[in-house]
Amino acid sequence: MENTISITFGRPKYGWLLVDFRHRDFDLEFDASDALNNPVKELFNTIIGLDDNETKRVTWWCEPGAYFFDIFRTGKNFTLIIA
Image (cartoon, rainbow, N blue to C red; front, side, top):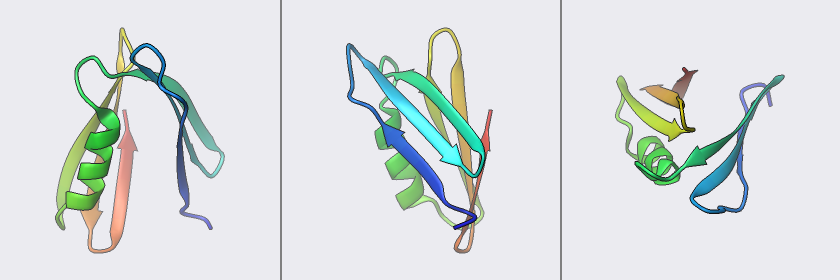
């Protein structure tokens, strides 16, 4: 399916979680820290609780930087911007 997104998680180790995000030919793999938040719980709560025309951010801390997943919903459609 053209709009399929896959997020696979590795086994947590010492506060780090391997995240493998894929969409079409795009593959982003990184180790996320649980030091400041629980990004898996944030992602779940964001997708389940996102209202129409609302944007929420999920932060994946990588030390020293971070990835930000900004998720926007319009009806049944979701838009994801990764920064």
